[in-house]
Length: 186
Length: 280
Image (cartoon, rainbow over all chains, first blue to last red; front, side, top):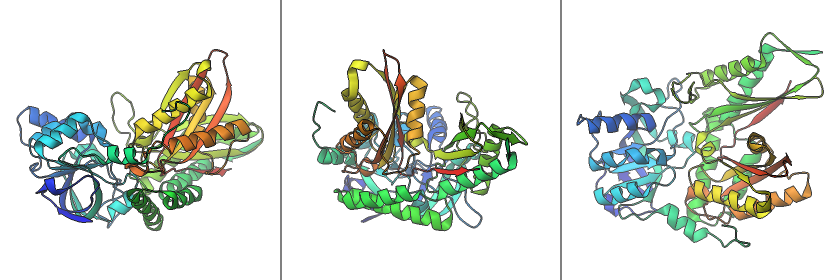
């Protein structure tokens, strides 16, 4: 287990397959927030949070019960954000947390701008919520669960899924455990 | 005629939604325990440990297992000798969903129009499938469906000549291409036959079966076993990180079809395979 703190530095040291525990501030954004963030970038306007060295978590949490910082908060499917990710990497985004693979375009931009992609366990949302200590909305409150939240996390469990050299745990893992199929099944 | 009251349906749907979202069905939990023992990848084993731990936390704290508490799918079997009094069945189902999602602190994940995309803010409407059956009971099956897995589902109108091999190729391809997106280990429903929409409905319905149960027709049961073995050879593994436990279970449902067709639908459910049922 490798301890990682935000804002991220020396991300080149992280390798695909490493299990990490992330502590510090992370920001949430998913489909609707990404559209707005990219629109701001296109218009040359400032973003609502400091993106340099930042980690974005693709999540739409369930509402907090009274006295709790947040409800369940597991990762959503990252590929939906693929078409809106490169402009953020160009501005210095260093980490993303989600689930599932990424497009070739994103992987190449991650190599170019030295960023890592972490995978959290999809569906382990109650477990992950135990590592989120405080939450506040920093932009787009009208989006509800899809608003940009600033989260303080402690030992948030994740895996380095794709590293700065383009090594990819999805490709490596599947290749390792794939078994031959008879009768032309593929 | 036996009378079933609107309020009783509301209360039952509410209870099923509250329970399904926070408590993993025992058959699914046990299948995950088994998968953890069988998984060969160390990373996959850790993922399964986290999933089992998550189920314990969610149950204990009455928290949703997954933040995506889904679009609620309800199968209602209405006995022909039942009269529902006090309101419409569909409205009772939606009211039950509305109350559960508010009281349970569940995420509201439904937009009222797929193009305008404005959140309905109460997770309604549900997707309700009604069938008329003999008797004087009302059977309700409630399955909140997350969309990480729903988005990875697939349907194809195969040719009769494609046969069983064509079905196998299509199912394996759907699972391989889905990779880690539907949150494996998954449960797979395969609907074969009927028309396009019938195949999809069969696949959805198949997901409600109990893990470990086999189809009563021996050749269909055999196909279930063969398909499960094949998808577990894809190497996808828990969360797509590679491994031997890609699917916990695979169910096939069949229906008569046209001489010219072989519709096949694959509906994928994540490891948080929520469902519950009750009879009024």
